[in-house]
Image (cartoon, rainbow, N blue to C red; front, side, top):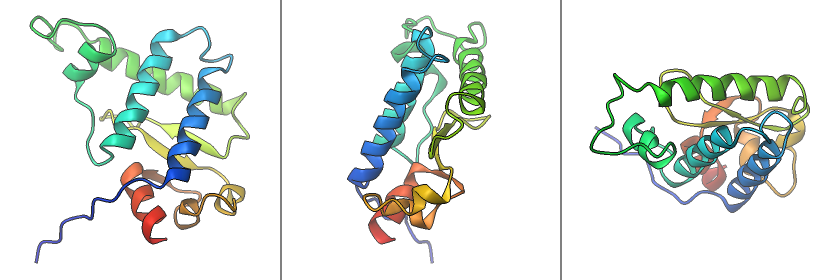
Length: 154
């Protein structure tokens, strides 16, 4: 028997925590001078919150984030999305290695996809009284869909 995943609305505390974390990351020394990476990270977060089971498509990101022309964009000739995603991964790693080393939430953009993931980094995050969702997923890297399910069924 094929079971379809339940589509539930994201837990408000998870959404608020993710957006607050985005603001903190965007204001950091690692990101403050990189408008391009702030835009890409913000776009990927909103996509993750709105469609957590889906990975954004390279062509859509090229058009919506980097202003490429839909009719003329060819990812084989213009690797802007792949290049900037790689740079964003490195910038996030640098942020979490330094200024964001104590952050209880972390964003990760796994290689091979453009689907942002949220990582509850410490046990302290799992015990936060106003956020119930992390208890089920603390210390693990999980897609936003799992956070939706954990938040609503945890």
